[in-house]
Length: 129
Picture 1 (cartoon, rainbow, N blue to C red):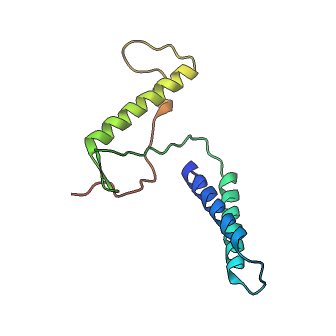
Picture 2 (spheres, rainbow, N blue to C red):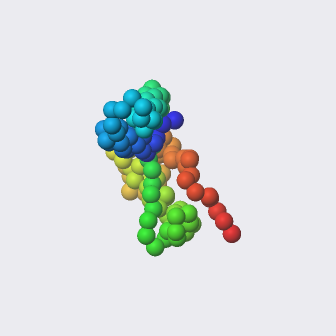
Picture 3 (cartoon, one colour):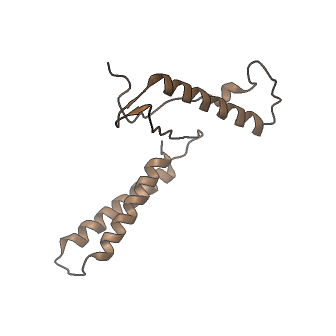
């Protein structure tokens, strides 16, 4: 399933390769130009393949930064669970509002099952001791 981040990364790579390609000389003996042309074709193919892949599910990337994040691979579990719980509630309320669902002051949110979130494609290790 394509992700917005992977498509954005490929688009950024494409811009970089196009700049490199524009800066290479036209010499028929130069291998740099051929290398950048091949890389550009490869990136264009990957973008086209991702564009053809359809999904019925929305995707989001949540990126945490600040004091609960330690280095590039660790994050406090209590912060993560609270943040994900709050985000889940926002998604459920937004879906209910868009669908015109009557919301009560208390109790379960009608249609909340349709807004369940799943965690996939974790960028780092999950838990270390």
